[in-house]
Image (cartoon, rainbow, N blue to C red):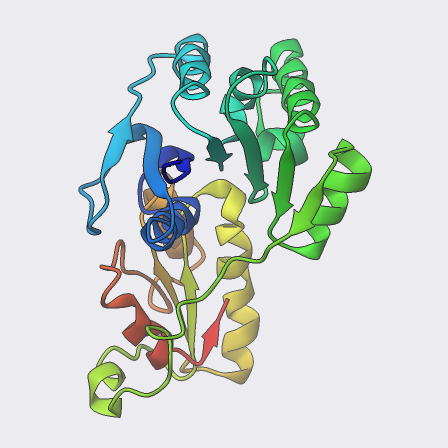
Length: 265
């Protein structure tokens, strides 16, 4: 018998944290299994030595059609994409389905989706099909409990996102990262710059922080569709001198910024 065929399925191959988790899992699990990283669309050039299969789905119906076909190609499909669940869990034959919830919008935060009949129905649809998965993973106690008691999922287990302690460790010469230090203290937020990431709350907190720490700086690392909106917001609040948006930072450089920061948000 050959090695198990495992699919890591994500929405988009981008600079987000979910993509980072799936890539790291792919790199590590391929030592033991035959692992393929699959996504709806590739939005950036890969930095890692990993092969990516792009579904190129045109719409939700096309996504479901292509996702359903994956069931015959793999033994296990680990999906981080709630939108693909209705196609993946349909039918008894095919791959076992593992769904990891990273705090996905349609299941948890209906206020962030279109407030319409179709939007609400889609949220309930996602909840229903999440309950059909063979195993469900929550990345925190809060999410695991919500999946178990509010959504009604079975076989729920908590598995926090891991940290590569060979990369993220405070053992580098200080001169390597002190030149990257911005502010004293330096508050660092890494992730997509989008509305559901509470970026506005972080910016709004700065006037209160500056009263006690006048040299403090809030540093955002990450790309996102709302980055220009928040730059404008910081300027309107007269916080543009104290809030810095560095955009995307290569993964090999990112540990240096964590070393330079005083607080990671």
